[in-house]
Length: 321
Image 1 (spheres, rainbow, N blue to C red):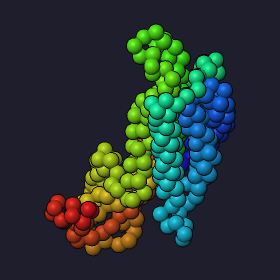
Image 2: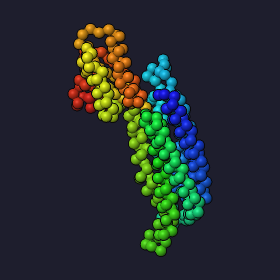
Image 3: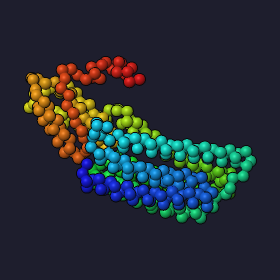
Image 4: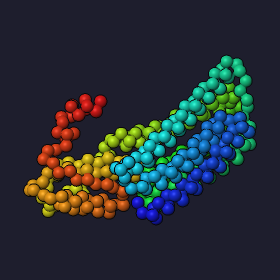
C-alpha cells in the first residue's frame, strides 16, 4: 500500500473519529432530555463508532508493518479481528436495546407508568445526525474509492455511517409522528411507541453486523476467498505460466483484511532450480499488483494436487464439520 493511500485512510478515519464523539454525546444528551430509549441506542451506537475509530487508527498503522519473525505472514489479520470486534459490540448494543424495550413494554402492559416523550430535542437531534452521518458516509466512500477500494477499514466505516444515519432518521421520524396516533384506534400504542420503534429498528439493523461478523470470522479462520477472487487469481496464474515448464494443479486464495494470499500449486515438467520458481512468483506478484489490490504470492512445486482437491466431496465435508 502506497503512502498516498495510507494518508487518505488516516485522514478519513480521523474525521470520522471526532464526528462520532460529537454524535455520541449529542445522542445521550438528547435521550436524557427527550426520555427516548431509541435516541439512547443511537447515541451508544455512535459511541461504539468513536471507540472503534480509535482502534481502527491503530489497526491501520499495524497492518502497514512488514512481515517479521513474530508474524511471518504479516499483520493483515488485525483488520479482520477489528471488524469482528466491532460487529460483536454492535450486536451487544442492539441486544441491550431489545431488553430495554421489552422491559418498557412489560411495564406498560402491567399497568405501570411510562414517561411521555418530549419531542423538541428529538427534532433537533434527528436533523443534525442525518446531516453528519450523510457527510461521513460520503467521505468514507470517497476515500475508499480513492484508495483503490482495498481498505476494509474505510468500507466498514462507510457502512457504519450509513447504518447510523438510517437509524437516526428512522427513529426520529417515527417518534415525531407518534402524536398523529392520538384520536385513532392506535392511540393506545403512543406510550410505548418509543419501545416499538426500537424493536423495528432492531429487526432492520441487526443483519448488518451479523453479516460483518460472519465475513470477518471466515477471514480469521482461513476460509477460502470469494469465488470471484479465486477466478481472477486462476486467470493470472494461467497467464504467468504460459511458456514456462509447469502444469497448474490448483490455486488457493484466502483474504485477510485488505490483503489476498495466493498460493500456486504447480507440477514441474522438467527439473527446475529455485530461481525459476522465484521468477514465477515475481511474475504473479506483478500481475496481481496491476489490479491495485494488496496481494502476497507463493509458489509450491509438487507432484500431486493439494489434499483438498484430492478428497471426495463427502470426505472434505466431514472433515470441515
